[in-house]
Image 1 (spheres, helix red, strand yellow):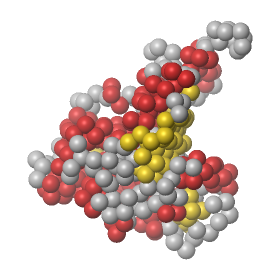
Image 2 (image 1 turned 135 degrees about the vertical axis):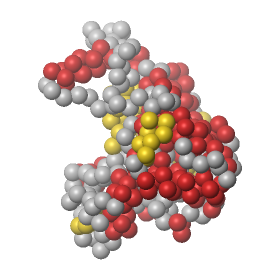
Image 3 (image 1 turned 90 degrees about the vertical axis):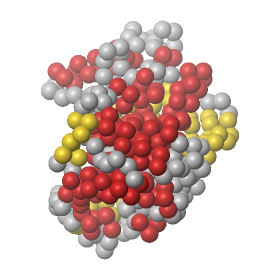
Length: 350
């Protein structure tokens, strides 16, 4: 393992994406999301993804100028055509638009079609959290899980993020999880480090349990909680691949398959934002003596008194990350980044 700083990696990733045609502002948004994920300890959605994105940008599977264009606009509901661009760029735009509309209407939904892998959805929750809102975000992706009791991959890891802003000075609650037993990027991380998988995480292409990460990447992931997790993944698929599309997860090209790099992923995202201030208990309808943030603070206190904690405390605002903080990167990831630096004529990996 070797380390450089958050700021150095953000600059490197921005330069790499710019070198393959991504406009600088969009390159920065994408780099910030990937570096934030790495800093949070979510290596499965961090720098590991940079070579995949660069491959697809050069091959045509990602449109470097695809910032997205607005389609249907019903006020509280907006649809964005992602134009096969970068998912982080689309969700950043959707999240900010969602906040503005929720502040006007109380609630908003922004659907993004024809997008790409967007990494950790927590990044997209932060515009709402900064504005004191609550947010729900879901997405689909390449099929890696079977439907309940099925024998072939039809569902993605179907990530879900639910987050709510805290009282001033408090940590928000952030639940960001896949409906698979583990994120697929975590499998790839084990593969990059040459580590075996724990039992119960994955199956090979024939449907047999495996601890070989390479076999798992060619096979299927186990669902979280058995059939309940698979059923939840079906719900996410209904809200994304089915309702928004344009592709079902079974049709989405795999980031881990270089032969599919020229094909746009066609992923769907949905972000729902709620104006928490409208539910603060100040009217005669809710009959509440505390604001939602005060109840969240009480829940946090109760969890702490029970020897537990609420999820999300370690996921610092991406805009507030310390640029001088050190990031430790596995040798395999650093080697892949170094290869791309040489290919693109960059100064080198930090």
